[in-house]
Structure formats: C-alpha cells, structure tokens
Length: 76
Image (cartoon, rainbow, N blue to C red; front, side, top):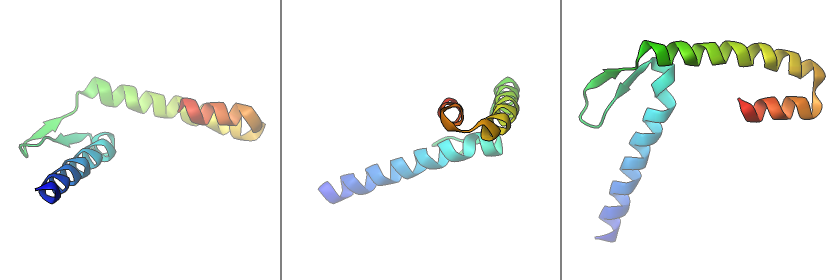
C-alpha cells in the first residue's frame, strides 16, 4: 500500500514539474484532464516584457559584476 502511494505521489510531482517548466515556454498548459488551456495573452506579454527588461539589466550587470550581478540574478 505504501509503495502505491509513493508511486502516485511521484507521478503527481512529475506532472506538476512538467507543467511548471513548459507553461511559459510553450504558452499552453495541459491540465490533468488532458484538455489544452491557452494562457492569457496578457500573461504571456508580461512574461516577455520582464524577460526583455531583465535581459538588458543582466547584460549591464555582467559588465559591473560582483554583488550587483548577484542581486540581479536573484531578482530574476
């Protein structure tokens, strides 16, 4: 019985990890029923905006280095 529970938990964790890593990369999420759900375009646009802003800041901070670079990586 414990092995079945562990197997179910591992399966659930694997599905959650797959969702979290692919949600913004693919701009689509597959819920547990298997139906495809499109992510709201405003969320995708916001994610793209943050990616652009952090990209510019990170490029400048790599030249500065030190704690400035560390803080930017943490904030990202």
